[in-house]
Image (cartoon, rainbow, N blue to C red):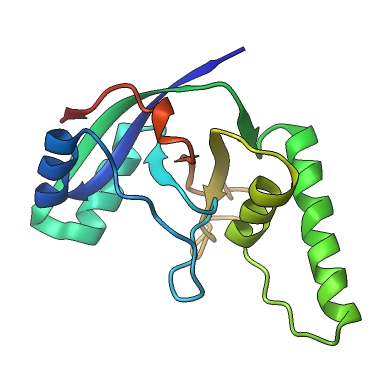
Length: 165
């Protein structure tokens, strides 16, 4: 069964105009210098407020947000226990393999998700919840982290609409 999402893509005004004109996004590729949290794909926030926050941080006064409707037939969802367990199992296998070969293994999320996608099973969208460390908790029990949900669309055919906000 398909899952529908609304995604918000923070970018520059120039890139937003190009996305609207061409009706496609540029793929983010996981590299050592630019690791991608959910592997290769087009990134969206589930909330407009987070896309705005990120775009303003990255592009300052030149920021823009593009809204898209996404229809995915397969989702690797790190909020789901089975997908999370598979992710951790594969991560451990990769780490163990590195150790067996005497190699240093600096594993990142995107590497694991790319491995799952390329070697185990394809999925249209990866979905994950991310948080930041709390530097200034008010009290020991006041410890709610800032958290947001990101989508990484691997199959661009899933992106059904493009609207500049």
